Length: 265
Ligand code: FBP
Image 1: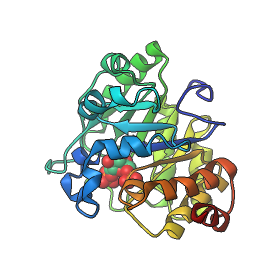
Image 2 (image 1 turned 90 degrees about the vertical axis):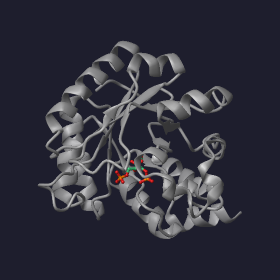
Image 3 (image 1 turned 135 degrees about the vertical axis):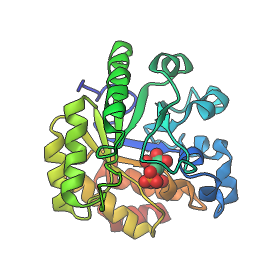
Image 4 (image 1 turned 30 degrees about the vertical axis):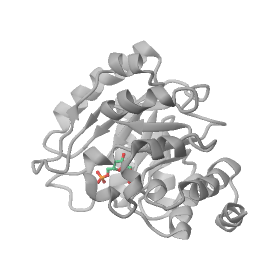
């Protein structure tokens, strides 16, 4: 773990990563509700919002779109990822090296670890290579810490999320991105287990404004540092409105009601 408060990934110690790797991870189905969301430029535009500290994309999207936004957006290069067409035990191909991520202009990197998968050992070894290379380049490393696999029946139960947060600390991630474990108390335990590694909540599938903001608020109140979110922003007709509300909850630590009111103005 290295100090990352002074890197582009953080603002005032908080983090809001706008994730847009779903075209790979889930496929075009995620773009059907709001067809314009298939255009990466729409998400890069949203990422120019002050609340967003980095946009997380795969290499191909970074190469094609980041050059037009490098003045206004900070890039988190997602180093591994797998399509939903893959039917095997959870695994993730390493699609980009840290060296190349740095060349393209990334100021941080992201890596998925499926703890509990039959492929955990290989993934942890790949993470080791990525984390050590990121250290050489001074890039913060965010672990998408997602326990899953045939032996894990419930991947969001509190003990599993606390273990996911701890894996990130043990393996040297600077930020642990974990699913919401269902309550503030459970998130508090995950934050405790992560020690000096900062915890951010993973957005999840689209819900109502209030439901989504309540889970973010619980994360902040539990000591989490923010959010890495995709669908709950760019699957909305107006991504700016929810980003306004998120800015309030995460950076100003307002109530959800205040954030919703501010977003209406
Ligand atoms: P969401 O906020 O849309 O859940 O995005 C976060 C994320 O981690 C993405 O980076 C990734 O594509 C997706 O979730 C993977 O979700 P899952 O593996 O649970 O289907």
